[in-house]
Length: 314
Length: 218
Figure (cartoon, rainbow over the protein chains, first blue to last red):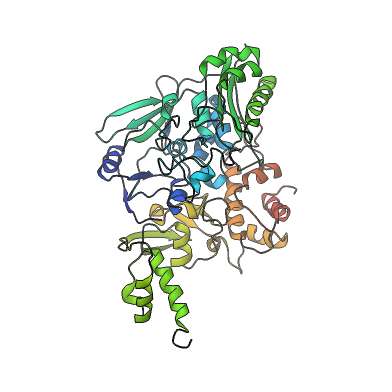
């Protein structure tokens, strides 16, 4: 790791202000992704702001009948929360499908949203990568890209977002509450939180410099049958080839979001009107603009069949 | 040859230190300094400031001055000489460094020691001793739940905390009904232990050891 200085923040406002004071400063909570990247010198923050003592570790009922999940709620605790298990099953399922027991005990709700890609070329500092080093090129395009994006990618980057939780948050229409260095707060709809790579794949979210996530909000429960189906190379502790988060109502209507196919959780609301017509129709519209390689073209059919399996059982 | 002879060792040492980027010149022998000066290595940076941290490990408090880059794993092994926790991958993928913090199992390689001030840390050394084994340690011995033994401390710490997670009603990927408490079954244990890799492949014996402690049929 490169040398850094370290401080513990006492309040969210103080943490955001501290982040604005040092260029390149990063917040650290669970640390499971950031420290990994710092060891490889992919991340080289000169200053770390430990946000673990900010008291953002509670799950509260909102006046609208939803939930407000503190940014520091650990993945284990969020997955195990009775209200989440009962009313937002797709979220519990997505969390439990991710990482290992040890990592879920450390990883936080906000940190999970901010995970960086697991693209092997991003991790290999000997290879060009526009996300790691803007302008250096993309080794995955024309490389081994079985795990890479099939939709929403650009000529600069075909990396995928690795989170399971974020896919469930997308299908649940979550909101991301933040505080900025000037003390102002806002709620970013999850649909606008993660960005497509375009020609700036190193900019992954709509967060401004120093902006701190304080909570993730969920609207009133959507009801229906909630499913998260993850298809991966191992039965446990592996990233998704594709994953499907779905909420299916009794009348056959519903919502779908995909993981493992794009730079962000992938959802096309317009495609959901085809839910009663079945998986093929929905997938056709969800992945209408898919650009595949011979390594990852299997993902299109895998999405369709995974969704079909969900709809058959729902 | 004699002129140059034993300096190979010093040269290796000097190169390693120069590469680490810390200022060490004053501590080297003159000939090693010359070697170091000839190395084109990366620019040297000042030694980062150390920080004071109070770690509570296995019930004992330790006040340490450490570089903030020190992971909990490195602090345990290199500073407190508790070498039971192992460094396998150093990336949170293998589970050999698993310790229990405030009752929860975590990978100690993916947290900084300075982040763990005020927390209760339990390592394999704190679970039991050769004269007074923890039941999970005794079960691993009885069922031969290892071959080389490198992953074993992490497996045991993980297994002990994992059974507590089942008792606490925390669901897993294989829990059929999220609205029910998870059952203590081998299927549950297997899924929940996926963060601990055993390259010798002693899984079936590890499974038997865990099942015995949990009081279920392997």
